[in-house]
Image (tube, rainbow, N blue to C red):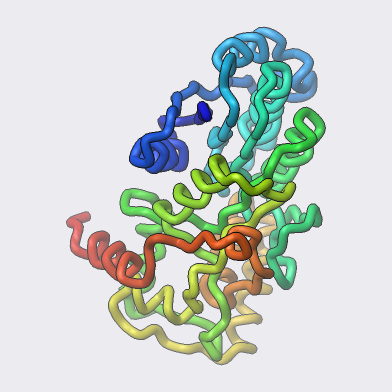
Length: 306
């Protein structure tokens, strides 16, 4: 088995490379195809040279993992987002199909299902922001180019040095650390080490992954997340009050650029989100990192100056 990781120098890609190399796999780093925002309307058909170049890189490769993309959920320029999160993945998928690659794992995001009551492994999406739309469009375009591709949807991914993680830790350790009552709702969050392990498993398993795979729930409730990262128990807000604040933020997000993504982050931290069982769990994969790793992550960030 030979594996190519597209976007291997990025946040997720570098973590996947580390896991696969640690397993002694035959793995190669491939640079992400750079698609200009001005080329979005012309689609993948205008990227013949990129497809050809990647096809050469994929020669003799059995599995391709696409980790490329723009991870900035606050970005409002739809052209920029579509170029990185939709057209570029389609280029990878077309090149992989033409090169005879046997398995394609495309790393998407649970954000495509937005505010649905439960995250699941269906094709149903709820695209509440430009970022969510771009990731969902990436899934659709990858599927058009490589019908057998597996779409992997991690939830919010955390690690030291990641801005969203640092923000969450600072809030969790502050006097305004709060969750919505009762606090026992599942929180779809994941550690980068667990995400990388899941992706590596999808790449090498002898089982045939389904078309969509969600990351399994890591066992944290909304209250657990805040307590482990903040090192203190958060205040539990009345549910009606918390819901009213979220609805106000959501309404404001329709008028203020960039606020929709932040409003969704608050809603996720307070209310969490249910999710269906993951295929990964049914075939025996379990996250290698648990509650101690979450606690250590919080301690590390809180004790880092600045």
